[in-house]
Length: 435
Image (cartoon, rainbow, N blue to C red; front, side, top):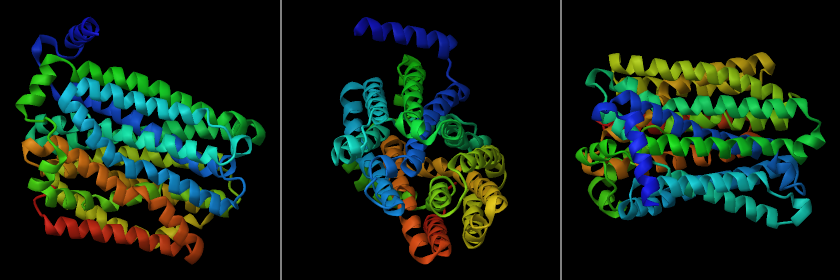
């Protein structure tokens, strides 16, 4: 094991830190690869939770109730994620960042590929539900441990005049992961018979997710295990500290940091997971067609995330986030009309929603990381991100579908509006958070 690690570090130094120099561009590559793999896993499961699991795991329920139970299992990963962060932070302190990443991504890959082999309810009964829930919890624990600190390191090493630009880089993984996941499911759902798709076609994206995780693991290890990067983490005080100590000293910042990006995190699921469930349950559109619309919207979101870096460096991150929260509030009023407006309305809904989301989501990682003192930034940014996803996104598809099914689409718009209000309130309470 020792010789293997030494060889990895030597090779990584030659590839990633020539002449013992480290630059933000190298960190950015590792961040994008890592986040793309995580978001691809996320979207593969999210799409399957709408078009596969209600039929495969909950065939004894009506489609709406089956989807609601599927969304409940979907939320388990967000509940488990903070626990995973605390568990793997302890491994990081005891055995190093390389061991932490290897174990967490191994767990993520194992949990993901286990879903690909999941038997149906008709084959093993209720055990299928428990196996799916266990795999989802495993994904959540692993995602908590997959925090590598590279986003915080990138922010600290970015030129002061381009911090907004570098803050948006980690967020590029979201639309890239969605584009690949949606395209894969659209291909299999659109070209296979229903029998073949539900028998084996839906499983292929999970195998692809496992392969991407392996590539991402080695790509990130080639950065974080090198002596140059280890020294940079240490000199910047980006080291794990006990979560209890961090909360005692910066607990209020964790709370504000979790709620500041709430609007963008709520919108995140309102334009990705929830609309797919609504279209699948309440319209005649095929999932494959709507997934292609999501691909188009995600490309607009990708461009908006890039634009957010340029805009934030000129008007300030806090101003941009506040403006986007106000735009999300306005969008929450017109979104139900668009989503219920046929194919053209759906397309406009996705494009407008993804543009607003990209501008807001593009700077959300900067909000999470920027306010902490250096000693607590590594641990604080991880826990804050976990809580932001839990409060802003974990239950968003479930709550939005319950509300819209019982009270109409405008109630889902009101739910999105509440997220925008929380963001504006958090930014007002801590005006320095987004600077």
